[in-house]
Structures are given as structure tokens and as C-alpha cells.
Image (tube, rainbow, N blue to C red):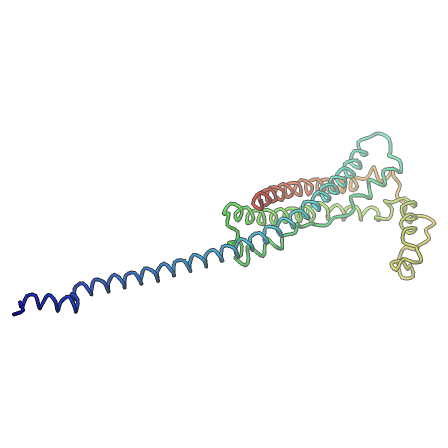
Length: 275
């Protein structure tokens, strides 16, 4: 006769222990969960890698454009500083002539006419301003470079306002003083106008000057209201006008030099970041 205990053990062996089956199911479920989590984490990591590659590509493109802007500004600023320096030196030579016993000769006219021109130059800021205004500056990973770009734009804009003040306060007032005493045409010798018209009288030149409706003819026999050097260099308004020109061009040149220094420092940072 079969032992009841042996029969139960045999049945249990066939059907399996419920506790054992539950353990196996839990292990299987946990394994599935772990696999799903690993898959999600891998997908997220791949997505992060892709996003980072896109960001780096955009960052490189932005830095390349900023470098191109700064290199152009560098060249333009160097030319502008040279121009302002020449204008300031010419103004100084005219002022120095007032301190000499003898009246200067006609060669002074080239120095008197030279400072009579002014315009405010602004570096190429389009890319940097766009980055700041749009918030895309965060594409750049380096906080120091982001801060440098923001500071650069702010300081350049402030410097431009300074230069405009020099122009209004000194240069424009100098022009007004000069016009009260002598017309600008009187500050150039006849040879200056002859050379000017010769360069613009080519029949093949579409920009050839037509004098039918101008106050100055193409053929000049004399300079109207020709300046008398002795009277000019005894006139306080002339002296004051050229001191104004000197201050305007000298100070503007100094501010453009500051601007160039800012430009070159940012350019150096970006070129290092590009490598």
C-alpha cells in the first residue's frame, strides 16, 4: 500500500511549489523591468549624445561666424585708428602754426582741409547681438566666453556713444566756428580742385560730374573768397575750431583703440575655443 506522504511529495513535484513559482515569476518580472530601464537609459543616452553633437555643431558654426565678424572689425578698426590719428596730427599742425612768429606757407592748406570729415564707425555686431537677444548664446558651453561676448557688446555700444558725444561736442562745433570765418572751399588750393575734376572727367566714367546745376564749375580759374593766411592765423575762431577738431579726432582715436583691444581679446578667446 502506497505511503500517503510519498504520494503528496510526488504530486507536489509534478505541480511545483507555489512559493517557488512566485519567486521565479518575480525574478523574471524584475529582470524585464531592469531590461526596459536599461533600454530607456541607453535611448536617453543616445539622444543626449545626438543633442550634444548638434549643439557642438551649432556652437562651432556660431564661433566661426563670430571670428569672421571680429576679424573684419579688426581690419576696419585698424584703418579707422590710422585715419583718426592722421586727422588729429593735421589739426595739431594747424594749431602749432599759431604759436610761430612767421605766417605759414600754402602747404598748411593740406593740413587745414584734412580734419574736415567725420563719421562714427561701429564694429560688426550682428551675430553677437542676435545671440544675446534670441537667447541662443546658451548654445556656447563656456560661461566665460558667454560673459565675454555680452560684456564686449555692452562696452562697444557704450564706446560708440562716447565717440558720438565727441563728434557733437567738439567736431560739429569746430565746423560751425570755421564756417563763420571762411568757406571750406577756401581751405584748398586750386591744384586740389584741378586734381579732383581731372579724376572725375573721364568720358567713360558713368559718375562724370555734370556742373549744370552745381555751385562749382568743372573749370576753375580762381578760388572764390580765397583765404588770406595772415588773417586766418590771427583769428581766434580758427584756432578754437582746430583745437576742437584735434580733441574730437584724438579722443575718438583713443576710444577706437580701446574698442580694438576688446575686439582682439574676444577674438583670442574664440580662436582658442575653436581648436
